Length: 354
Image (cartoon, rainbow, N blue to C red; front, side):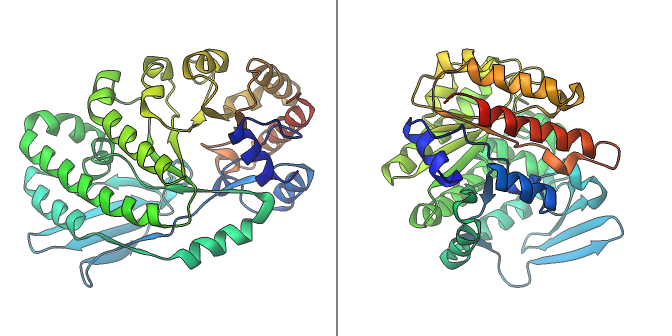
């Protein structure tokens, strides 16, 4: 079987020739080591999307800096800026590095930030998506990000501390921001639903706010979008990398998602795979992130850990992945530790009974 066939077999609840091992492609930069792993049976999850964001001409200026980049947005209301630090590239999901300055710095910035959001439209570039998918071929599958539900997404305009405070201190402004984000997400999802994507992420469960707010602000959005995607014949995923996932155990099935990805068991997370399976049932594909901390115990312990983990859940609806750090987290002194750990995962996967 190819890795693409293994993935779809797991989705269907069939038993592939071995459990799929599919790290995020961006966490496994091309190298002879990665090529050898692919040859031995590892695959990749490639991120691509057909929806392309567009802003009015002249609104956005990109300003390179010594240690990063600044984005300046000129709106009819005011000028707002955000900044990224490239030296923090390894801890960021952005190609610009870690975000260190946010668009909304004071309450006076809300109208300009909403103007940027309201002006964001989406066009479709199906050819670019299909090209990436074709290059990946049978090595894996393509996974599409669609950003965050409005409540979570507001953090990227305020920063976590201000996000916590403003929803109480400036409730009307905060709610207005959420409405702009809601409408922008609607425009994005309309383009995505019409595109060729089949596996679509609709949000993140990071665990940085509690179950009550998740149920109030996130659950309705996730349930709505997962229903829309299922009606269109597409799969929905939830990126659930929280280390306190047990707090949300009973809420996750209510989202209606088909795949819970980035699920990270102990020693990082607080939820065992077997307990997750009992709570979520057989219809959910659990996409497991092996916590890289286990690598420091050595390849034999990593292999034992993965073998035991897989045996704890007899369901075929699971895959193994690396969704958080992979080889982007290495330096000269840790590279051999990570490479031997990843090799050990593949060995355990190839030996496991499906």
